Structure formats: structure tokens, C-alpha cells
Image (cartoon, rainbow, N blue to C red; front, side, top):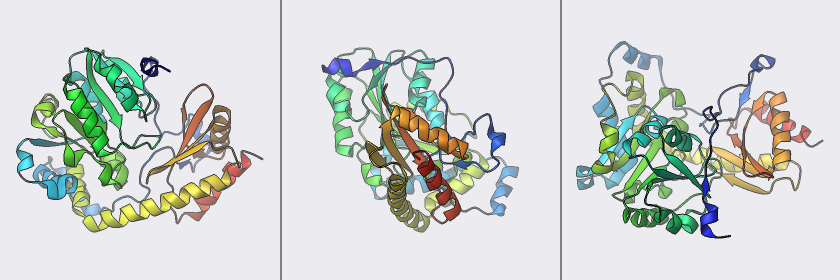
Length: 363
């Protein structure tokens, strides 16, 4: 297959993408939904009632949050680098995904065909043309993309959600260098990278790269709406002017500071998530019909099973009838993947409920 044929022109429905974490319209059928449709840490960072007192004041702890964020994201790599390096705290990485398309002249952007759909949708609705590339084969189409004079940015999701594919920092650096020759920016979404920081591009950040980080997924507090954007001052300048005063709420500043500073909790949680996700993957594979799964992928926050589209739909329907929500991604006309978010390891009732439902799907 020629390289050019691996790049597809993406089309869009009128409605925005659907997301996990939302029960079906017939939610009244189940009062105890088991929601595995998100990739959120089920063991959230602890908070106390006293933290809520911050809600009675305007946000005034931005400096403490920024200091904690610099230590968390940059660590020993802090120093003179910060003179040209910008770290923006934002109200969730989704905010940056929505704002970035307005920071570029209208043109074309390359996004993975399979991946978090908000990237393509946000560029599309701001008037850009979206080109889809195979999530794990950017290298094979990069030269073709570089020939496009209207290309503004290339988006990489690392690790990919839901495929779990990872690019090494060295590989991403190489992409960035080649893109820089034509003035193209590399945008890397690292929403699921906190448990494997060795894959992060932050510590070797090219001049034409922007990195997005999510707080809510690893720390288990998505409702706090907190994230970070990292990049050189020049490339982030158009985004920074779009952020007004009090962009981060008082509670997000307080809890964000505590969580990003708590290295003991972070280390213990990384080990716990990595260990449990491996065991969780094994349990899922034992529960589905032998030979049904064509491929598996895992991060510390979700497990993805690839199978025929028919089988995936059958499993999803059976699980929903049992009050269990999972995400289904069509891969092509014949294949799809099911993404399972983690449940708590100690919740034996929920675990048994999930496994029994999977077993019923192939009886």
C-alpha cells in the first residue's frame, strides 16, 4: 500500500464525540452502574473537608501550585531551562485541546485515526482540515505529510488512548526535528503517561513541541479540572494570552499543590496501578471466550481488548444489561476494541460482577 493511501481525510458528524463516564438514557434500569468507561484512577488522591474552605475565596494559591508543578513535571531538569521553558497550569488538558486550534492559521492537522476524538473534533470545528494517520505508524507517513505546505500541526497521543501504543522520546524528538524544517508544531498528549514518565517528551522538549498533561486521570480527581501545558515560550505565547485571570479554581489550586508535592503517595500509587493493571488484564482474558481476543493492550489505567466488531458489540451489550459501562472503539468495518477502565482491586463484588457478565456473553 502506498504511503499516501495510509493518510485519510477525516469526516465528522454534526454532534460532538461521545465520552465515557455518562450512563445511557435508560440509566434508571440500574441504580448501581459500574462505570469502567473512563481511564481514571479508582483510588483518588485523599482530600479533607477543611480543603473546601478555599471555595469561599478567590483563587490565590497559584504560585504554590506552579512551584509544585515544576517539581513534579520537571524535577531535576529544572534550572536555566526555565528561562525559555513555559509551564502553564490550565483548567484540564481538555481546555488546551479546545484552544490550540485557534492558535494556528487555518490549514491542515494530522491526528491519529484511532485515539481521543476531541483532538480532531476541536480542530475541525475551528475550520481546519483533519488528516488521519495510523496511530502506531506515524513514521511511515511523515514524509508524505511534510510535503503538505498547509500542514500546521501533528498530534500524537502517547500512550495512545485506547490502543496503548507508545512512542519513545527519541522517536518523538526525531519527528519534531523533521517537522521543524517546515514550521510544523508537534503536539503530544501525555494524559496517561504519569505511571511511565520515561516515555515523556518533557525532559527533551524540542523547540517546536507542545506537551499536554492531565492531572485528573492519575490522581483520580477528574472533576477538579486541572492540567498542564509545557513548551517553549515562543510556541506557547498564543495559548497563554487566551487564559484570563483565575483560570484555576481555588480548590484545584489547593489540592493540586498537595497532590503534586506528595512524592510518597505518587510512588506508591504508580506501583499499585502497574501491578493491578497487569493482574486485571489476566482476569479479563480468562473471562472472555478463548480465541476471541485478537490483541491486547494495557496502560496502568486501562486494558484494551481487540476482537471482531460483532463480538465487541455483543460483549458491550451484555455488560450494559448487567449495569456495566465500557468503551467501544470501531477500528475498521470488521474489528473493534473494548477499553476497560480499572475497578478497585479490593472490590471483590464488582470484580465478580464484571467477570460473570463477560462469561455470560459467550454462553
